[in-house]
Image (cartoon, rainbow, N blue to C red; front, side, top):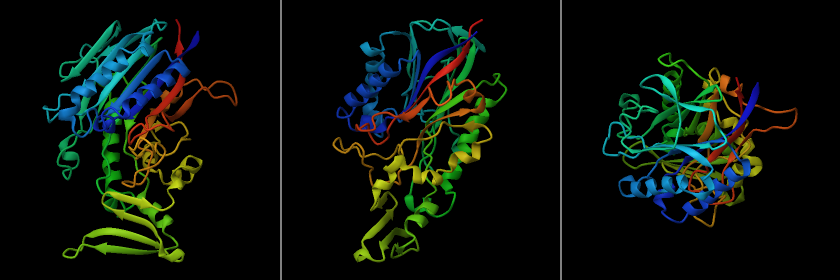
Length: 394
C-alpha cells in the first residue's frame, strides 16, 4: 500500500546569526517554528552551514545554545526523537567543517530507521541523540572536509559535506549537508565565463555526488541541501547590465591589476550604473533582483546545468537567497558586497524526485521557498522544501 509522509527540509547558512548575536535569532526561530506549525511535517531535516560564524572560537558556545533552543522548544515537543550533529571542534583544523545537521521525528511516525555506516545496517531511532564537538567515531553520520589539493589558492577553508541515511516506511534516502566554495573576488569572478570559482565548485560538487553514489554502501535516492555558493555567471550578467554604459577599468598604479570597474550611464548625467571592486557590487537598479522573484536573472544561474545528468531541482520561484542586508530594518534589501545569487538550494537525484508525491493535476503539494522573506534572517535567507514522500507500507 502506498502512503505519504510529509517531510520538511531546510538549509540555512547561519554565520551572520552568530556574528550579530541576539538581534536576529529570535525572529529566525519564530519564522522556523511558524513554518513547522503551518506545514505539520512528520520528519524535519535542518542543515546548517557556518555554525559559529566568522568568529567561531568566540561564538561556538552560543551556537550550541542555539541548537539546544530548537531541540528543547515547546514548538518541537511533538517530535519525540531527535538526532543532532554539530561539528564544532575547530581545533581539529584538518577536519573542521562548521556544519550542523538536526533531524526531528514526529511521535506519529512509527516506522523510521537510521543507518550506521560502521556496521552497514539500519537501526531503529529512539530518544534524543546529540553529538556536539568532535564527530570522530560517530557512526550514524559521515562527514568530510574537501581535500586541500582541490584549490591551492585557498589558504584555509571549512568547506565540506555531512551525510546521514534514513529509511522512512521502507523508503530509503540519503540527506547530505553541503557547503561549497565562495567567490573570493567580484573582479576575478568577472574575468571568465564560467568563472574560476565556478570551476572549483563544480569539482567539489562532483566529488560529493561521486561519494554519495559510490558502491561502498548501496546507493539510495539522495537530497543535497546546503550553501552551494552558486553564483550568477558574472561576466555575462555584467556585459548585459552595462550594454548601454561607458565602462571604465581602473588599475592599481604600480601593477596591471584591476582595482575597480565602473559603468556609467551614457546619458542621465553619467550616473554610476554599476561599481565593482573585490568585495563591492553596487548596481543602481537593485530592484531587478527582487522583481518577479528575480526571474529575469535565472538565465544566468548556470552552475547546476553541468549536473543535470544526476541531479534536479524544483522550479525556483523566490528571489536570490544571498547577500541580504544584516540591518534589522531592511529585511528585503541586498548588501552591495556581492551580486545577488541563489546560493542556498535543495537539490535531489532523479530517483529522489520520483518519490516526491506531486498530487493531482494543477494542485501541487510541493513547496520550495525561502523562510522569512520579509524578516531579517541574516545575510542568507534559509531555503526550504516541503513535500509528501511516497512511502510503502508492507
